[in-house]
Length: 127
Image (cartoon, rainbow, N blue to C red; front, top):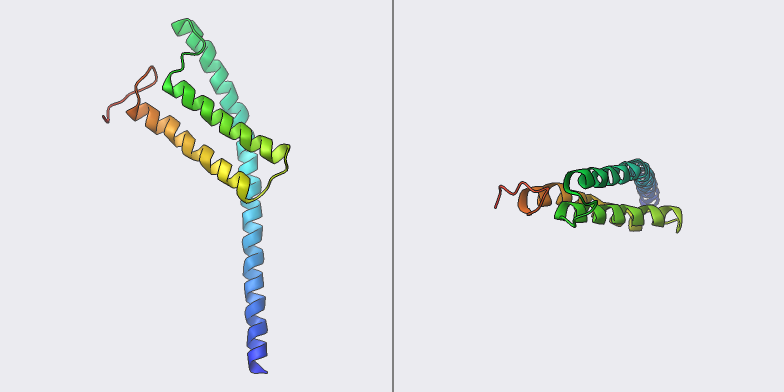
């Protein structure tokens, strides 16, 4: 009898912990969707305004510089994320993997290209 009560209490505690974990994951998923939905139009505006500025400065809207190319890759990754969330209705692990990939690509774009790459937007002083 005592083992059954202990087992019931243990199950109750684990179910509560799993429920809280599920709530937290769902909330983080919702917040990541909101933040990316806000940042994506800002990224789009930044890329377009940079292209206009590049046309004024260098006479060409797009030069396939490493920074421009990685910005385009970042834009495509987050476009795929938003597409899978809005059109396909994905939630949970799959879009989280895409968002994590986008976050990693942003770090490549800002640090890798700026400090290691060669091009118009590079300040390659590490190598």
